[in-house]
Image (cartoon, rainbow, N blue to C red; front, side, top):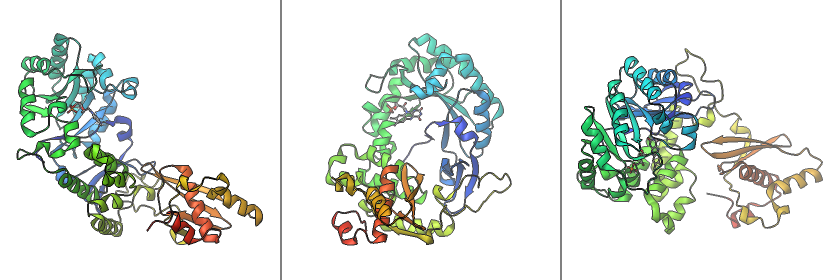
Length: 427
Ligand SMILES: Cc1cc2nc3c(=O)[nH]c(=O)nc-3n(C[C@H](O)[C@H](O)[C@H](O)COP(=O)(O)O)c2cc1C
């Protein structure tokens, strides 16, 4: 859309340190995979080469360097987050906590500068005192960093507080490295507003977060694109790079904002799969075909990566082990559990199934729940057979109820018609 560089969201050092680098031939991406559960910690691709700066949350030079070494061939630079005021960052000595430990912070930057081949930057907030901020930035400059991003607020100020471009201006005038001004989104509605903020801060570069989340075409010199065009472009990328549905949903929600209240917005909020989200913007078939193509090429979702299959050092392209359970042997239907369908607790699918088991002198069913990307699916075993819904529920309880419903259908305890009638069977 016209941005020169894009920063990743903050990734925590220990999470990346244990990740394994894999080339994903099906998607054409480089993946950093958590070997314990197969989740993707960071994914990038050729198209992003030279453009993406990986932002790291760290409190230790050694750990930061280990991550730097792991990713240095795949990113344009490493940024150390020294601005995050959130509790989890501060408690871990990361983010804005580093502003209170300037020597430690400088040590991290210096270690990276001296040992990595790529540029090192950091992102800070203003200190309450201007001269202290200048001193800090000069000290980081002397550590050899290539640029510094400054969020024009102090650690205790929140997004609704006015930013302080005049303070950024004073700091920028005191150093030679490029200062990237940040924190102006409230006043940035169009491309020309970026220059206003840039000039007020006396810098050459601006970093935009929220205004870009709302409509990423804010970076286009030619002006904003209609939101639907942006969503379509974004969804296509999500399909092409197999982005997790929950993250896709979160990002589109940030674009829709008040439109979430519209009938289309409400339909969107009910979506759980990437395909169902894509259907709203006429990309359902494209999504479906791409997912089939990726499966054929061997791109397995994280549920297919079982613990341990990424641990062999020399095995660069392991064949992911397919599903924990042989899907051939499972009775599967696309059934969702809607709590509102059951006013009487005795009618709840699990309760009903347990009563059935008692009456027929069978052992109670067992439930094994898989979790993927904040969604849940349960494989239920009853009387030697396995049952599961194809529908991923938003919590474990619902997933178990959904699987019980499939089982009741398989046993003939509930009828297909009744499930169609109450909307539980999905197409
Ligand atoms: C949803 C969200 C996530 C953010 N995550 C990060 C992050 O991972 N690292 C970071 O340095 N700043 C993060 N920020 C802060 C922004 O980078 C930025 O400093 C702040 O929003 C002010 O800039 P703006 O006015 O352009 O939004 C986040 C902000 C938002 C709204």
